[in-house]
Length: 454
Image 1 (cartoon, one colour):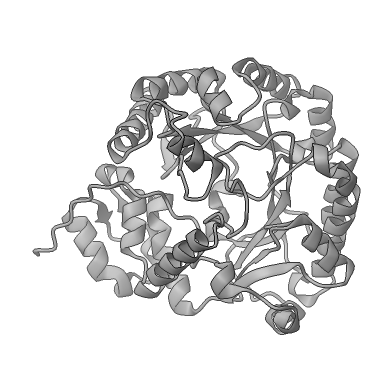
Image 2 (image 1 turned 180 degrees about the vertical axis):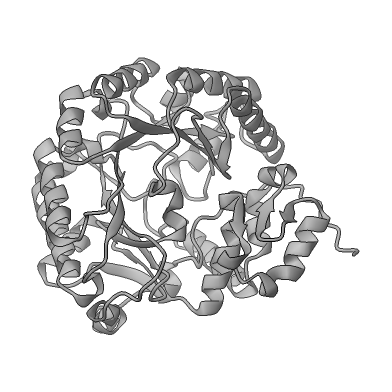
């Protein structure tokens, strides 16, 4: 076999396939009813879990690297009550359709934004709407994100725990105070420790955190320091994300204006990720996903967020992304709070963009997720279709096969995103290129084709 591949430039991990692009997949109001008609039929029986995601867009400050849809809480306080009412109504609109009859939810995950910014009464109102309208009898995990400010409220954590919330998470990102300020992360390191203490005092159990690597003004020494500090805090799960500086964004403008002494590059990204892997391994944290490490003393629930990309997912809230293997639907809500509320108040699902996923694309998604999960059973993928490419990856020591499974090697863990991209179809590569070109042309954020952090 002469198919020699030697990856040189590390690519970001892929989590969504196929992609959604507003410029290619926009859904008009006069076609919405037909697109959503799948809700009139019962969900097809499947072994895949049915998970729920709730997007809360409010933040007390806006980190300048974050591509997710959010709005400043201070200037949108008057919209919180209308938003909560609209969110409850959206849940009810889904629940009254045939799709959810007899469907048991296994996981509820709140993201944003900063969901913990909502008042306790608002969070409970939304939880009650979920518990009342959907079958949550087998929910194993209810997770809510916060930040190092909002998670200091021990009494609030206790109240939410009493109402079924089992897990929380926060973005620590870095312990470098100077870098935190440049990235727009307002809580300082002291606030991080206060939050962890509050989580412990509330006896909250499972919690996780995010960290960033390959940031401007960051180096391998700092990464090792961050790993050591996080290991001391003993979170159950760590997510590590490489910082992407996208065109049109405020962060790109800061880089162009010389606000940082050093800027990320491919070599620094490789070295920092190597430091992450070595550091967490040294602390006994096994790598359980391409970007995740688990505390060996506290393994997360089997129905947890780490399985979301292999499950059916219904999302509520602005910018919420739904993916349903069972019906081949892939869509997202408006990335605009006003439009989201308006559509729901008019009895419409707040759709912005989406597409229908073919069986061929579902198979491509399943093989693309092998590097993320590190290993999958051959019966979970169309092994015969992708065998030739798998063999090429195995020949180059990026993947391996056994009698019943396919996975990525230790060498492959460094190049998970590259391996994923190797399995992308030509059509999906073309769609991604068109989305990037049009977003840059229209001066929009690449993630949701909106104005977030632009």
